[in-house]
Amino acid sequence: MKKIKEIATKWKKVFSIDYRSLAFFRIALAFLILFDLYVRSKELIAHYTDFGVLPRGIFAEKFANKFWVSVHMANGSAVFQTILFLIAAVFAVALLLGYKTKIATIFSWFLLISLQSRNPMVLQGGDIFFRILLFWAMFLPLGTRYSVDEVLRIKDGKEIKEESIFSFGTVGILLQFAFVFIFSALLKTGNEWFPNGTAIYYALSIDQFATGLGKFLLGFPDLLKFLTHYVFYFELLAPLLLFFPFFFGQTRTFVTFLF
Image 1 (tube, rainbow, N blue to C red):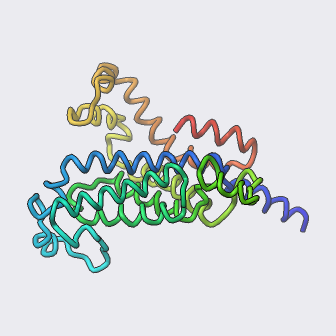
Image 2 (image 1 turned 30 degrees about the vertical axis):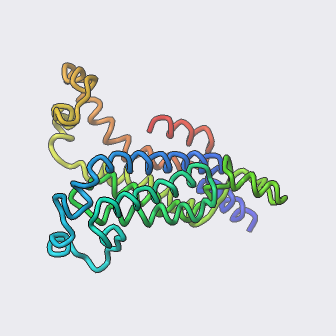
């Protein structure tokens, strides 16, 4: 029985998350929401109003889904959409500061889902992962450290002295992160990955996405072949090291740095 308890304690630690890490996660999410709103606001009329490429009538005809919920569909005017953007920004700032964190997280997730559901034509894989991260965030105590909520809690004599937390939410977010990379590796099945090793070369050859550094690396095909194989094995194996029960802190820190 003692041995079982020791094993359970060790694995509980593996699936625990430091409150400070959750605080940085909260801050990063908030900045991402604000940046996402800023980028989308530049094409607000074109993408989210009845005067753009996808009026609500065409949306209802081509994309309607009874499981989709979008308050952005309630009105097709630019003024209404601007108000919703501003409300989403207010909740994002509250999330950034850690004020009423749980409420701010829930409404940020709901408004992000609503915004993305309004025009699925302008989404990509990163948007899907973004809303999944916000979903798991609702089950995490993001306001425990470095937040207004923490200050108010200390004033009330309710300071949380534990350094980390183990919960359904911590297990979910860690497995979600690992699965993204593992299944990404398993989907890399073309000859560009094995045996040719030309996948990264082709990726960097797309002018729409390649940076100056990317174009420079095109001159080193042998290096790119090595990196292609490295990416595959790293995505497949590195997430498993996040749950390595020995030298836990050092291993997780090192793997995080590699990611």
